[in-house]
Image (cartoon, helix red, strand yellow):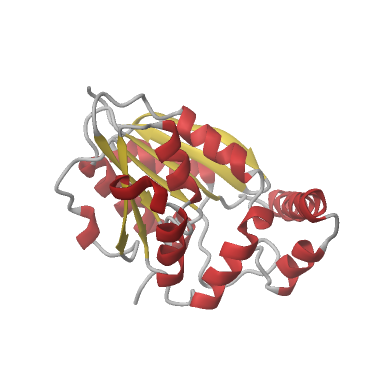
Length: 242
């Protein structure tokens, strides 16, 4: 069983088309992530887990000119879109097909300077997240960072209601700002995208405080949450050393 067993290529196509509307403050989240990665000394490699169409990979490539980025994803639709959109970066960007829950990809020839992920880790259950954090810690070079932008589960019903309302508001605002209308917002509901309104078995977000503890348990230092809105957060930590 793969972590994305219920994720279909149609879902990938929908997200390629509508992700800019469905993700709250997507550009801000990417800026937060790139601002938290130490300036690399020399040529390094960074991994983008479940890279989608490559928006976060592109932000890394633009911010760090000496960096090679590996975009990993299960979806051939996503990988094809990323390869097409980032072709201008030539050999600084390459893709790998993988499943996030599997172990094979976690053995790397070169220790990455950063591992990032957007809207993917919530597909793992609590045990899978903890195992991922331990394996990424082992994989990283000393001083390397793990940074995650993802859905997090509110711990009480009031938090769920707030996250649901704020996510709806964000998608509606972004739809109107970009198109002058609400069609993307209407598709957001037609596709039942929000796990806080239309829960399904594919989405397994964990509470933020639990995940911060699991990062510390894995060995990460400077563990923190850096940004949060509408049930989405950016959080992570640093592998001690230089």
